[in-house]
Image (cartoon, rainbow, N blue to C red; front, side, top):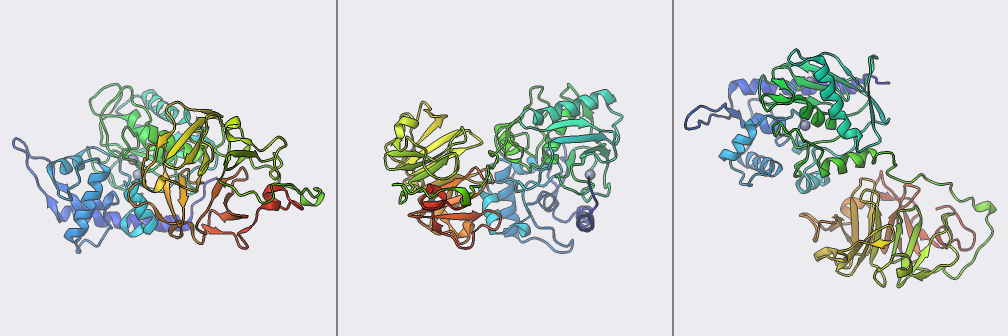
Length: 510
Ligand SMILES: [Zn+2]
Ligand SMILES: [Zn+2]
């Protein structure tokens, strides 16, 4: 099942080398800041080593040093991530935060590893890593390589089972303890440098770390610092279950989060008997695995078979799309002016009985739309028009809607939930991310379409990630099949949409 990859081993060695440099630097005390409280000496913080370890600074040779500006920017980024006042200065609160017990995983992508897009995203939504690490199976096995002697084995089993159940409750994942030789998650207690590129540090500081899902032997493995005082049901020491739940988030593919209430925040917040996953944790894990017992995307259906389909000319062949959207029940609707058209379940052509007034289908909808989308995460349909948006559960408008939009969000022309789980909205030659709680675009948006969507044309009129899992855009008589991986239009597009979507002439595959 898992194989060792030479490349992985090499990169691990590189990390080990970097880690050795880091330790070396620590003992030299370069840039060490010794701060003293009024009554007792606080432990020193090697600020550069800390910022390097957690991704805010690039790792540089021990004899080199970071410029004041670079360090100040890194401190600002840390302050933002830790939800502290952002000053770029090493104030008391910042140093205190750096002394807090925490997870050994990085918070953010190291500056040199960020391309422009990732950097922009990291500033906007400082997720530690993009959601590209996940298991390709839903039954996850775990195994105890060893136990700490500080707690009974039964307590450690219970802590791990309880921690995993937090993730199982909101995903289709099932966890099973294994005695086999290739578990996904291998649980171990280690101290100091233990040859995996990330040292522990005695009591306090780093508590634990885990490896993201993958095919390497170490993928998913979760290590606890044996030098901590591991406890259960008490505020003393460090609670094993809460730290486990956090680390398993990494072992399932999540990076750190600074969202309020997130279990994936890097800092240990103390014992809380009622700890639970935050909204952000649930949102992100479901982006990876979907919700419990449901798929994130509908099953693709059979492609139309053009050779056996008779010619079907109809009066809708020139239909322009103001919006196109999946519905909660798997059907697809096209919006044009005051009317709504249901796409035939074959995937092309219009269902008999349509068009109808939009309000016949989406009760209390506006007369006409700028853009429409269905979110498989929130399971709501959103209709945008002018400076307002309407939210629907099924075909029923939710109370409290429409709500107002500002800035770039006014008069958007196309919208869709893309494969990364984000909602994107388009207008003219720009796009932005959108969330229900965003009245106006976050910092850094809108951006030129070309900055993310490759050669995608401007002035789009409708967009959908359709039931075949492919992203389509529409403009005038044409549509575009978009290659999500290459972030380019497929060769030969835009193409006329009359045949593949509206079933005119001889229907052809999209
Ligand atoms: Zn962590
Ligand atoms: Zn380790």
